[in-house]
Structure formats: structure tokens, C-alpha cells
Image (cartoon, rainbow, N blue to C red; front, side, top):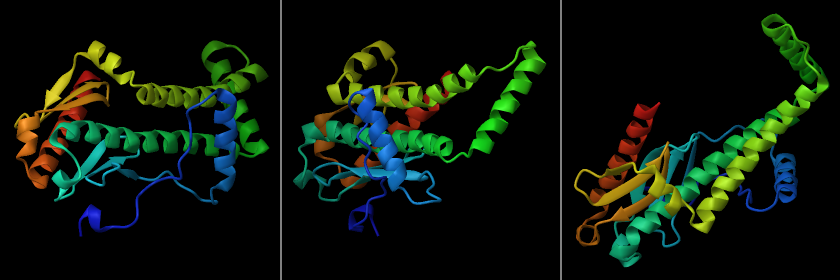
Length: 231
């Protein structure tokens, strides 16, 4: 059974991270309250483009696991729109993964008891005293808690940049690119994040779905290998 024969999408109920910090905090708190006990970070996320021609599946860190191309993709997308549709689907899938990861960290903090927090503060105080000869202050706990919100804000800004199209400027500065084995697709990336995807329109025009899938998967894997080499 192909991805396109399934009616269900692997997704977390959408968190609208775009907006000001007050709206972000209110939305995250609302979502936390709506999730069932025992909720775990999804091991993978899936998104499909608006035409239903492309599916991208990523793991919990946003690394692409697989790509699906509808056998009748050319009835749904024009060849010159394929690369952009692939990119938008990738961004939607990675956005879900980033949101789920941030939400998981927030849930961990929210579900801690006062005893848990007191124990963690004592542990941090002991480490500070042992390593630096200083005592942990209450403000340090507040700063640590605020760092969780900072992570959420960073994800919010990243998604907002992608929404505004700022990824093109980022791609220009990254100057790292990989092409698929037969040159159908070219991906510009920074770190582990693809910033832009372009395609050879004439080659895409004559390609079947499996060929396009293999080209896309190979290019995404090349990005991941390149990112690993940078670390």
C-alpha cells in the first residue's frame, strides 16, 4: 500500500507558533492541557502538498526518512512547480517535528512536581558548589525555565522566516549545495536544514514518480551526510 492509499496523516494537531510571544505562550499552554496523559513525541511526521502529489516523512529531529510521489503527479503539478512544492512539503513536515520537540520539552517541565523541581535545584546547586564553589540562587532556576521558552521563541522565529520567504537570503549566505544523482534537483542547505530546492524542469517533465522519488530521497540524504561532515 502506498502513502497515497492511506487516509490518515501522521501529524500532531497544529500549533500556531507564528505571532507574538504572549500568543505563543497561551497557545502552547492550551495545547498542553488538551493532550492526553502519556503523550509522547511522535517518532515521525508526515506532510503532503496541497495538490496531493508529494509526501515527505521526517523523523523527530526533522531528518527526511522518505518521500512519496503520486504516480499521477503530472496531472496535479506542473514540472516548473515540482521543486517548490517539494520544498514547501518538506518545510511543513520539519515544522511539525520542531513543534513536537519543543512541546515535549515544555510538557516535561509542566508535569514536574514541586518535589521534582526542588530536587533538580538542589542537584544544580551541588554541581555549582562542587565545580565552582558558588551557590545556586533562585534566579538561576528562573533563567533555566526561561531557556525553555527561548527555545520555543527560536523555533517560532525560524518558522516565521520560512513563512516570509527569508530562507532565500539564508541560502545565499550558506553556499552549500548538493544535487541529486542525475541532476533533477538541487538543494541549498545550512546545517541540517534545506533552505531552497530548485529543479531541472525539462528532466522533471519526463520523469516518472519513482524516478523523482529516488532523486529527492538521494538529495535529502546527501544533505544529511554533508551536515554530519560539518560537525
